[in-house]
Amino acid sequence: MFHFSGFNMMFPEGRSFHATYKCYSVSMLPGNERTDVEKGGKIIMPPSALDTLTRLSVEYPMLFKLSNNKKMRSSHAGVLEFVADEGKCYLPYWMMHNLLLEEGNILSIESVSLPVATFSKFQPHSTDFLDITNPKAVLENALRNFACLTKGDVIAIKYNKKIYELCVLETRPGNAVSIIECDMNVEFEAPIGYKEHNETQPSGSGQQGALGAGGNDASAPGAALEEVVETFKGSGVRLDGKKKKESQLETPVLKKVLPRGVPDYDFKFGQIRFDRNIKPISDRGNDEAGGSETGLDADSFHGTGFSMKKTRK
Image 1 (spheres, one colour):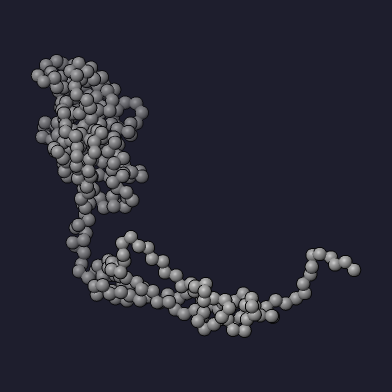
Image 2 (image 1 turned 135 degrees about the vertical axis):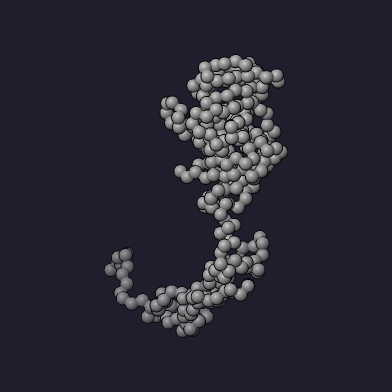
């Protein structure tokens, strides 16, 4: 065992790295604020650790097991930089919280080799996560700043200036996996509070969302509603000066409305249906009574016409 400025470093057999440091959150790191460290799952270690790791020829990527021996808590992380003061290491705040660490507590770090991830399952800690349009893509982008995942950890990702916490429910093929250059399947469990909200909802309260326009009750399963939709109000005038036919007068339109939660059983997959109320061209035009060949009355236009060309006398 060797002693270096307040911390111990051991070289056990098997060419593995093992050291203890005083750990601090990234906000305590001297210099400019390092928000990039908070976005991921990597730590900052002192330069002496890099020298030792190089001599030991530790396997890449460098992955470490972090242990709080007093609280019997452990996690895993990668390393971002080797710029910490000797005897110290800096962790993201969410990692300090997982390990039940306070500023200046002793943290044990040892190098490990983890299997490559094939599957992981996450559970958001808030239903706000459902408001994200594409949560899978957001999580995939956030995990680029992580080197590994540990079952039971609660990781934190930032999206649109908001922090979302997700619990790692499951990882395969082990309880701790490497996610660097891997093809990993991701699943989501319902957010905490989502199931409880549905279970505690009073019976019958769900029917309120199934009321159609006009207050029609759609509580019967599969009951369809007919909503009266009034088209354009007022009287119209034809361009040719004729009066409208009775068939062209505006009438209320009955629109079939399905209650919320009831599918359209007439829908056929792969087909798009367009409903139009336009009269076919073949039925228009020359069948109008009293019209000339052009369909216009003789009295449609009034006034005196002028010619742009001057006539010769």
